[in-house]
Each structure stands twice: as structure tokens, then as C-alpha cells.
Length: 117
Length: 111
Image (cartoon, rainbow over all chains, first blue to last red; front, side, top):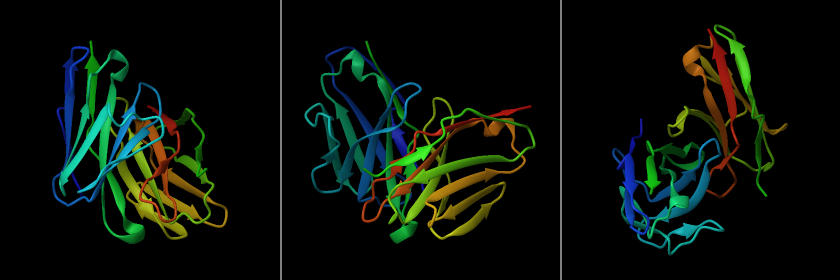
């Protein structure tokens, strides 16, 4: 099956610092990856669509200058949370697509738990 | 607004029973449908996808799709306590790669 990895799995940082999260597709190439955020006991919230070689598409209400996304290769997308604040503490999950047509399937990474002190 | 609706539950079933999870969607042109399982504190894990009307079986899991009625369901046979999790239904609307997720149904399987 398709494998998506994320690094780091856990990060604790001080308020005001920036944090970079990596998402890799290990056994397939992904022209499109997605970044989600999930607060405790809440649903997944799509933050942005990461497109290889072009700018990310952000969902309404997501600050593009705060959540920087770079999809520099077909296997790597990064999310940088800039000037993190305690309210950014959350579970960040990436996903990537593989397959074609109706059989396109989205696989999720294991997630990165961010705690901003 | 493309919507996917699920009963939030919890759905409680005894061990060994069949758990039936249901999902309805609003976009009649939707092409493919997914069930993900999410354990508390973990990311979603793909269980099954289906894109043709009818049933698709994989081990203890059966996905059922009825496009005319716009619903998709997941049956879990011989439910185990380890099946206790939140089950997310997701739909791929026509022409989009972005999945639209339901809010999930929490399943509790009691020993």
C-alpha cells in the first residue's frame, strides 16, 4: 500500500518561533498533497492543497502568510507554521493522492502534534 | 455546498455483532467514496474505497454504494473491541481531488 510519512511526529516550541513539518510519499509520486488540522474531538479541517511546482491553494480563513507550504518535489511537501502561538497547537496531518481516475485514493501521514508554549 | 452526512454516534455494538455505519452525500455526480478509520489521537487510515454501485467486500468489511439514493454504508462483521474508533466517510465530488469528509461516526464495541 501507499505510505506517507511525516516528520517530526511531535514538536514543542516557544511562542513566536517557526516550526517546519515535512510530509513525504515514500513509495509513490504525489503531484498533490493536502494539509489538514485537527483539534481535539473535532473533525478534520482542510487547510490547503499543495501542488508540486506551483503555489499552494489555501482554504478560506487559513492565513497563507502564517502557514507556508512548499511542494518542491514529487515526494515532499513542507508546512511551516510561522510565528507560532498557543492557539496553533493542534494535530497537523498531511495526505497524498495516488492512483488514477475514480481509483484515485488519498493516504494520510501519521500526523504531527504541535504544542506551542 | 457539497456535503457528506454521518450520524455522530456513538454506535454501540457487542463483540461479534455486525456494525452498520451509514453516510449520505449531496453531490449526485460524486464518483468515488471512501471509508477511513481514525483511532483517538491517530491519523485516518484507509479501510476501503468503492466507486461502483453494489457491494465490495474486504475481509470483515463490506462497503455498499447506492448512487440513486446517494448513500454509502460500511458493514463490519464479527465486530471486535479493536474496531472501536471513529469512522469517516469521504466523497470525491466530480472534477475535484479534494475529498469531502463527514464528521465521522464513533463506534464502540463492547467485550
